[in-house]
Length: 255
Ligand code: PGA
Image 1: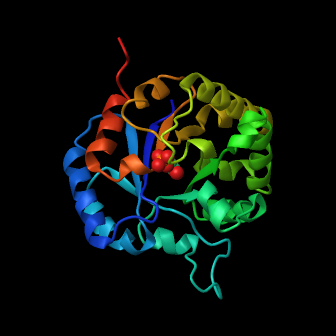
Image 2: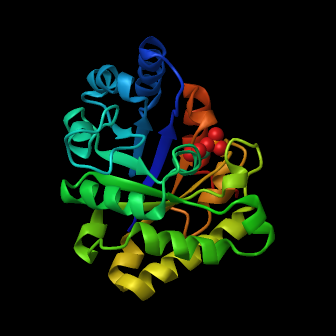
């Protein structure tokens, strides 16, 4: 049984004081009962303050990115071990904004996946197609290429800490959520790809998240799909109420 996962990606938003306020509200609101994970990914500078507040709560911490080197002369970068040291259980890798603005390639991302997996830092690997690729019906081709590149050299036993987040670039921050049936079709494709590449056990265990303009209006129809195991939420995770509403409505059955 795959454990449902909700991730709030705060991106480059909020100073330490507002991060603390948000996480305090979340902890108060997160008296949820249920078998699922809640993760927040604040900026690097807020990690320590947020970690202190999260102690004893069910909310876990993620880094938004990390270096492709384990340590040493990489001014301005943060290593996998540093994230773990700062209390992170997860790291988001391959986000389309990191690919676009920092020119991150699949090859570079694969080095990060390897480093994170070596210290059992859980990886949320983001993949997704552009609007042009979507219109040209190239989604699956693009995703397969990204998976092959990002997982190159990663052995099967290291994949135990991996989740995949399907985030169509055209849906991120645009208010244009992908159609749940289409997302299901893509997630089914991704799970089948995992089965073909790594076997049934890995494919049935891996969590595949959707991200891109998720709000409480669309979360339940997305989460009703059998191959959508969780949500990666950007804008709507910046307010405790909207993040909380997304989590709550995800369990509505529509009956
Ligand atoms: P969004 O961002 O929910 O604001 O579209 C999602 C993401 O980039 O992870």
